[in-house]
Image (spheres, rainbow, N blue to C red):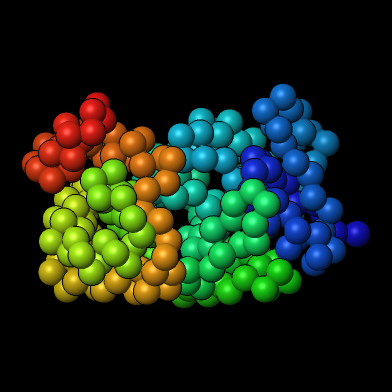
Length: 261
């Protein structure tokens, strides 16, 4: 009998993955806020995998509370995720997927791009998503994963912040507000460069990331720029810029105009 897969955070995304795992024949055990993870680890010390599907604001505390028995089983899927987020908690090699499909309540999943995944459970994730017709791409190296994580951060922060200023969808942003989008994107890349210890500093990589932003925009041109998390994304970006002593003048101007402090 297959060992269960534990899912922490059974929201829209967690539910999508649960369906894929179930179709592969794995039992799924959910871990809710009222269940102590240490107690569950006594009952299930060796699950097949542990999917962490909580929001960005909860990920750090959840990872700190992961039982030691589960640390080599982790699958992470948060937006704004970077290696420093798990390395700072001494988690060595999680499986990480950059999710490029959107799932809203009552609607089917909408794909922007194939979702790249890297790590020990990459094949499991690939197989689960294939069961529910969601495209996935297995990466070969940690460097490829880092690129994909930064690209997703660039896309989601840039479009969300731009949405605060001009609204609309990403196609309209790229066509009618290209200079604004480029200014925001460069501020975001400056922050991402600091968060990755200078990895994004080369001109060639920044150009690749900006090309990747355009590719994502073309993947779903009618995607709305501003989600409900936009103000918090801008606030987090400014907090990190302050820590790094970065100018990020465009982000600051938008924050001041829209009272994001």
